[in-house]
Amino acid sequence: MRRDRSTAFLWFIQFFCCAFLLLDAPTSRAARVDAKTIERQLSNSATLGLNKTEAAELQKFYAQRGYQPVWLTDDPGPSLLESAMTFIANADAEGLDSRDYGLPELQQLQQQAGQSSAAAMELELRTTWAVLNLARDVSRGRLTATAADPDWHITQPDFDAAGFLLTAVQSGQLPQAFDELPPTKLHYRLLKQTLARYRKLADEQVEWLKIPDAPSIHPGDTHPHIPLIRQRIAQAFDADGIAGFQVKPSKSEHYDRELVNAVKAFQTQHNLNTDGVIGKNTLRALNRPLAWKIRQLRINMERLRWLPKKLGDRYLLVNTAGFMLTAAEQEQEVLSMRIIVGRDYRSTPTFNSAMSHMVLNPYWNVPYSIATKDLLPKQKSDPAFFSNGGFKIFPGNNRNAEPIDPDEIDWHDLKGGFPYFLRQDPGKQNALGRIKFMFPNSFSIYLHDTPSKSLFQRDIRTFSSGCIRLEKPMELAAFALKEQSLPEKFMADLDSEYTKTVHLPKPLPIFLVYITAWVDEHEMVHFSPDIYDRDLRALRYARW
Image (cartoon, rainbow, N blue to C red; front, side, top):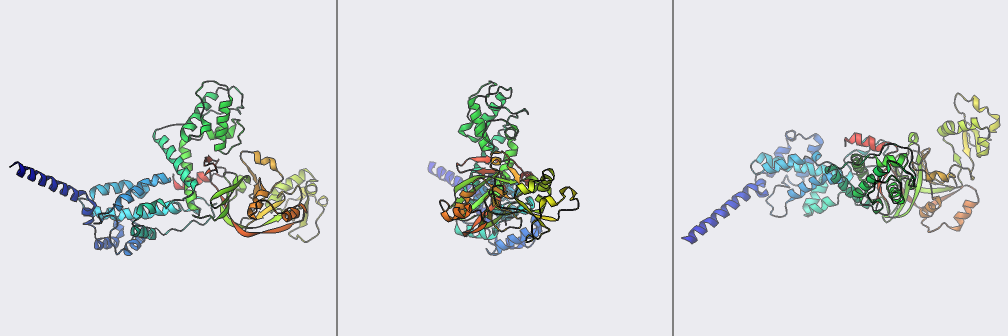
């Protein structure tokens, strides 16, 4: 009798468990989603609220599968649906927004799908729609680059989302395929880790202290803002864990050596001169709110997705926002230097090309706008400016004519235009220095040496007319030629002071970009000022 009761109890438990599994398991949901129903549903895509492009992509994907379901199937293996839901939930970690891919709605449909065939069908199709869109956005960027940033002229990568998902599902390696979608470079991964830390602080409602405006505070000064600055640096240590930020708690108003060193480390992170002086640029960096830093990280991760997956075995990356040029070989940084970029009204655009040759002891053919806006006023105030600077004046655009003596021209009488062409001879005063690096582009931009070396010590280096001035032109020349040091003939040609063209053994890819959150060779995340307001413009476009 006891055995009969036990048997009956076990039978009841088994029945209950099976019934529960039938109600909840993916296989029960799959029973309500079949190929004919999917095909019929896709023929009336308006019921899902899809536009023509989205409907066409779903049609393309399912047609190649014979309209068989992907997420709600009878396959007892690992749940593809759970992999997809995890992928969508992780959109936030990539600097995107999981709500843009319908995560809350999908989670609700997942709860309803066991009891409703309509919910199961909608879950199947909406999951596919979300995965296709998110895969594309993680791989090549959510935004259209040229719309978000009209100064961006690098071709955005293509991505076949339907082809990707078909291959990933067929391979049985869907989670791994998802992991391989974002940029694989260390820069992106470290920005992603920083974003996660900052968002955690934001979730905990941490607010960084704001330091009131004040005249520059120098090492050794006594100032009432010092205790606040000490606390703010301590907050930076909590956020980034950089050892140099660690300071002892103190209410002292003395700007002591410990805090000076911590401020210098903060200046390094924010791409400022490491002089320990708390001036307007350092104060502005200290007062950047956490919310802005999060937005800055998001838009720069997006920019990295806009770039090609592979930049080349050897390439140059010119970061105009960071005022830095880096040369990389086999993804390892081998050279870096400070640069000077265009003023805000002559901002250097974002584009890519391939360096083809160098010009030693170059002439400077002065652009019309620079001749009229920059140089002509100097000549008017100093009649010897053109002569002393090695400039020659030619009539109109006739560069083969005899140059005109600048003393024969009444420069103050030029009111209806500038009917001359200016060219500066090679020499110590030449604005291009001793060497310029050429690569084809429609912006007339190149890299070059400069006689104004002191400007490299400034925080914000926006002094050029659009071209890029180099701190270490000779080191770049050696890298471009694939040499450890410059050959004797090269140096002899340079010292001859005659203009000479040197062709590179192989074109060298070059990318001029605008990245305000970036990573150095020591794997430290740096932040740069938004000198051209391109972060602000792109964030407004994205509504982030």
